[in-house]
Image 1 (cartoon, rainbow, N blue to C red):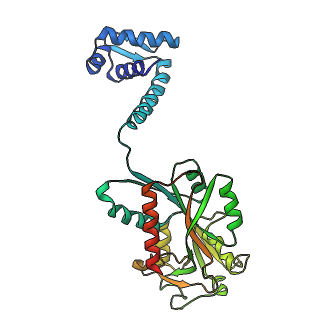
Image 2: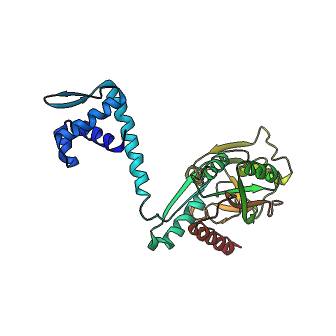
Image 3: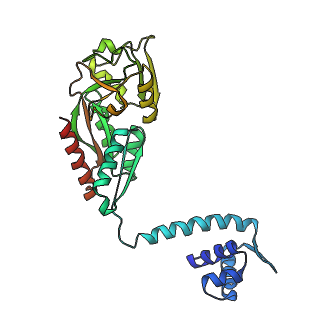
Length: 304
């Protein structure tokens, strides 16, 4: 079996006759018939019913047709790799309006080179899997001192490593609808009673980083209301239009300013969270990855 046989078979099915297929394939009708007959003999089954009006698939032929389409598509993708390699970068992170904005700005700076940029969003485990399987070159995340040993051990088992870009603090984000809006800073005690909206939680999420305040996390009493979402857009809208608030890092703390959402420092959380990227230990980063990291370092430097 070879690619030519599958091409002749799929083309004949799509066009409904050997004659029409021969015209497209720039060959003769007898040759198309001969190639497909050889395919049927090799597979030991009849794939097409021949009649005066053309050809139709048998039940076995329907299944072979589906697999043939997939095979030809993959063959074309492999063939495309023979040409000039496309410059590109794939990164992943937890849902982040912030990082997507920075990636868009970075793309604008590099537009003349037409790079291919891809951003994937998921939880911590998604990020580990994507970088480990080479579906993404870089994975951006936050990690607190409290979770760092477990975090680093999880990465080592997958052949990954974490590179810190900045130490950050925690901030409480809220709109004027929240009674804490006019405060210059908030304490751990203040956080026990507020209504929180956090991104979908996993073992390393920022809501768990609240534990840096007392080593155990917030006192989640019955009066504390905590909602979770995997949508950055929904989180912003809830902060803007209700008295919900959210705990996040100080990395680019003005990211919600355009939505009239204020960032209030959480006392006692100074430099308690690391922001950085995950990469494969044995792999060197591409030029594009190095450029994006340098760009992030510049933006972080401007914030300080």
